[in-house]
Image (cartoon, rainbow, N blue to C red; front, side):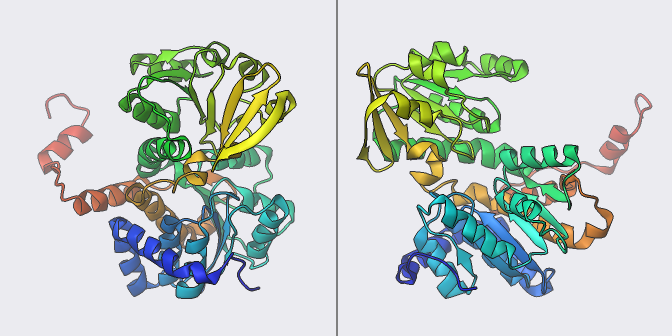
Length: 416
């Protein structure tokens, strides 16, 4: 099947973006050079459902350098960069099925195109490709898969618990060199970037509400505080709420925060986090954004019910004028604001995430006979390898334990 992209004439600009990202992904570049020599993925069919960005392009190029036959579909209708998709097809001969703004039917037609390729390894961001293969009974021959996000890992752990998972999944999201950096620093910076590009509003002095204090929420709260906002965190987990308090943030229920917030960002992975009661309490001019994987965290249907007028007032900004006269602004139609309104995570941090993805595919190929249909994490040694490569690329050296220190730490005898 031929690729499905918007316009191959966009490829020149896309190639520049891919090369720029590649220059800032030294760990992945190191792996690419290694893969080119060793060809660890020779002849393996890899189907990917990821955000089609310049960073993702570099992962696809690395996998192809390792000998893999790769197909790529989008994991979100609004995150596809059409010029990047065009360049992947024209310049790197990697089939891509993704068009920015595609409707739901086209979205799943493109996932089906990757599924019909009969991948032996799947790479997911949110779990849609893996779920599709399971729903359609197309899991035969799949050696294993990987998952990039917290949302996807939650889905696959639920599948494992129900006994319906048909092949092993590597939770790349759970690698330390992924979630401690990508989720925290990547989401934090790119979410603020998306809000600023969409609105051009001042964050300093505003009341900024972060719904969820996982690693993504931590990053958003940290960056909003750094921009001068007065940050409020809402949580359902008592431990995370306590962490947020001790990190210096105000913590309160969403219903209370709704009445005083200027900006709202949801990063929970759950549904209707900003639901009916919260929307009823929002003040005039509130800005709502989401950085969770799916567009379900803000109750858009209820917003539409209340609205007497809905209009696009800026790119990626929809104004809902409610019956009582309040104006509520929804960014990027409730989809990932950092990818829909900006460019997603910076390449410098995706460098580690996609190094994990590349090494996870090799790990599946080498160990699939030992793995059961369960959710696994990558060995700690891979985290260490990636961290060492990243530090080296930054010109940073660290200490090493002496043999005496190693013996001391491994002994239970006092003073030995």
